[in-house]
Amino acid sequence: MKERIKKIAIVLNVLLLIAVYFIYQSHSLQRVDNLLFDYDMKQAANHTPDSRIVVVAIDDASLAELGRFPWDRAVYAPFLAALNQEGNIPKAIAFDIIFSESSESPDSDMAFAEALASYPNVILPVTGIMGDVFSTSIAKRDELIKAQATAKPYELFAELAQLAHINRVVSKDGVIRQTWLNMQGPDGDTIPSLAWKVAEMAGADLSKYTDVTDPKKSNEPIAKNTMTIDYQLVTDDFMTVSFVDVLNGALPPDLFKDSIVFVGFSAVGLASDGGQDTGVSPIEKNFKLMYAHANITNQLLNGTQVSYAPNWSELALAVLLFALFVLLPWRLKNIYSILIFIVVFIGILYGQYQLYQAYAVHINIVDSLLALTLAYLANVSLKSYMDSVQKSFVTRQFGRYISPDLVKQIVAQDIEIKLGGDLKLITILFLDIRGFTPLSEKLSPPELVDTLNTMFNMITETTLSNDGTIDKFIGDAAMILFNAPLEVVEHERMAVKTAYEIQQGMIKIRDEIMDKYQCEVNVGIGIHTGNVVVGNIGSYLRVDYTAIGDNVNIAARIESQTKKGQVHVSEQVYEQTKDFFRFNEGEDRMFKGKSHPIRVYELLGLNGEK
Image (cartoon, rainbow, N blue to C red; front, side):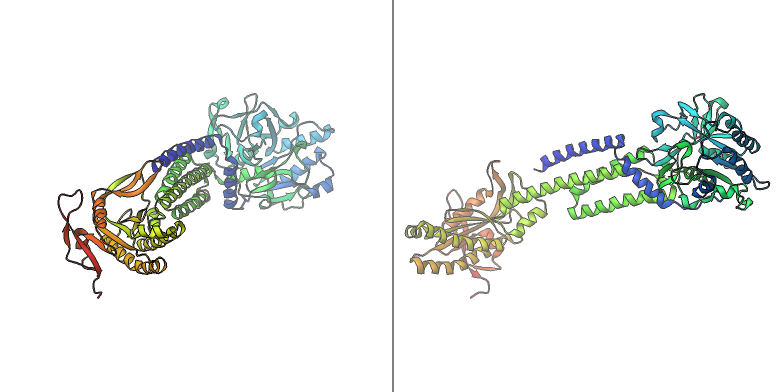
């Protein structure tokens, strides 16, 4: 049984390990990993923005005063003038508003253009048309993202302002977790992201974010292609002022001194150039995208990075946990293994959480948790099945013949019951009911069976109470073993004690049979100790636990020469039990098949008993 289960376990575990590897490679559990990543980031957020970042929102108050959007572009000239007051000039003014075409008023466009010419700190957005790539977060770090085409601001404005792209990177679950810090246009020009351009103009040290070179500028370092956004802030964390308040000069001029200004939409339903201008971040379910640019800028200013554990470490962790929980269920009791499983499972979750909180390093543990769960469930199930089959087999083999406590010991000690036998020193007790033949002639079959069962019930209960094993009942005889299958301390004494108690129990039964049927019955018992072969002997179709060997025959021969009510023991049994029981002086007897006599003693009673 064990060998077959072992082979099944090996095959099953190999298949499970292969399955875990393919699941890891296919990123099937990426959505679950994203949930853990988002939770870790949300818990790590400090909600403390860089004091230089100011968001100017086109809000409901601005719409109420200036009218329906889009506004006449002439309004942006006094707006920029209000931001760029002498002595209080911002480092950068980044528009998250697309001005892709000329308006219906050339004069208004010219007024805006003149303002752009006067203030070199203004950044206007470019959008890259990415095709299928636009909808995914997967990008190569050693190559620039190449746009199929770009939508730039109206030519009059594009020549007078700084340009930066505002493309979002959306994961498959709709969450914005990464950003493209750099993009290559169809003409080969490198276009930085809005946040990168703003941070650069603010004088931030961006050296740690440069690992790609610009081929058109003598391999000058430029921004990484893809960066994970370290969201520390939600919308309410940023200093946000109304567009109309800036325009009307209702704010202190020094608010914008050396600041970084983002201009975008906060009013419900408004979007840049008619497009969708809201998104989902790991720490905020619904926010305006200008706050994503502000978050990225805050990250670049603070020099923080989100990094990932290498793939080999994730695979190594999965394999290690898989191997651990292949072995543990087989080596420990189920109660202990499940406790370890729960502790390790929670420990892995907590460990990855602490790793992110301390170092902003994310490790994908989902596949590792899957590996340990599959390994544990598969192997604990196999072990439980094997234990169940083993327990059923032991109970079926021994349940009727040995005490329940011994059955429990066999199961608990995982003693393998296999076809075949082992040489073992045991005590064998043979018992025969004398006077059974005359009794059977007087009784009807039901009466005979009932009487026989009464005697055998008493014999069985007495045997089991003394840790004996009933090997078999043969007609009106019985064969009982001591010290098999489990060890029995002082098995010789327990055998003699059993014989004595059986004879005492027969007194009442004998009297009842005499009164009822006028027929006398007695029991003759023979006991011998010696080495025999014990085990499950038979075929796979029928197996019996029994003992065979010459010493079994000797015990049977001793019993055969007893008279009614006698208990005879061999010299080996006598030597081990004479301190507990009273015997006669013994005599040498010849038995069939033996060339030398065997000394036999008759049990007379307990020591100290009169």
